[in-house]
Length: 81
Image 1 (spheres, rainbow, N blue to C red):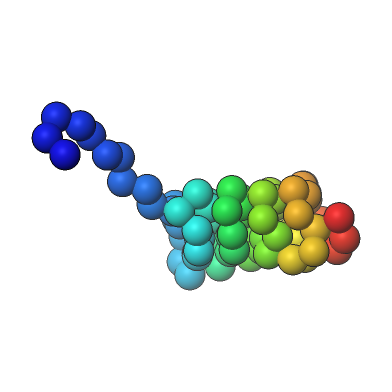
Image 2 (image 1 turned 90 degrees about the horizontal axis):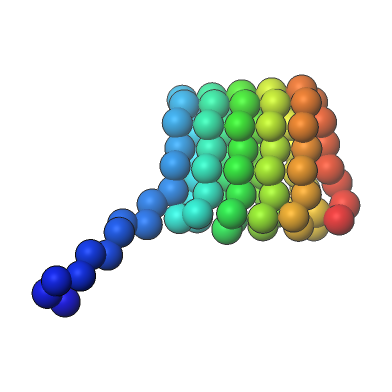
């Protein structure tokens, strides 16, 4: 369309082996992983498997069943909603 701007939708992944699967996902840190929409994983080996969740800290994990969860601090885990 002439005269309009469509911003590119891209995920953000920074760090060795960091992966953000969804365009609204963010993974920052070595091996950080953000699985779905609106997921944020910050820290070495931080893993978010549930939509809309945030993990901050090394080795933090959020299980797939824990939608909209927050895990904060090294080694923190959320295993249920």
